[in-house]
Length: 126
Image (cartoon, rainbow, N blue to C red; front, side):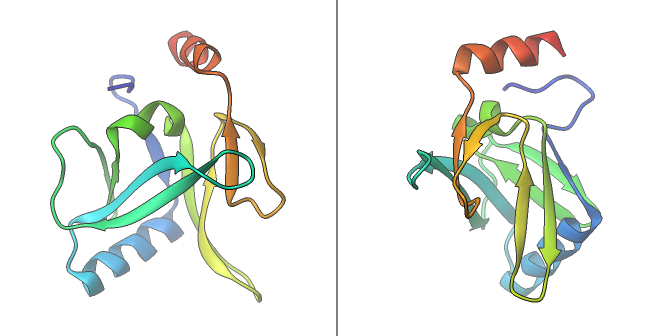
């Protein structure tokens, strides 16, 4: 929907692709759907769900055995995002490096996006 021909909507690091492929194999899913919803202290938060069926309107990114689907209403907000998987002494999980985020809460779980007009202007200019 909001893609640029020849460019993936999101990029997936090798660590994230490995983890997603592992989750797909253990859960028997078609992949991982990412999206956004209202919530959290900054106004929006990411969603991640196992998917048993690919929606024809999803943007699909496949890499190294991993499949990520982007929900239609989230595509504009996630375009240009890098998805990583990080492991530290205290926690492990997926990290989103999203150029469309204007602000985030201290824990990084909740985000605020740039104005829609600003996002569309940036994406049209790339």
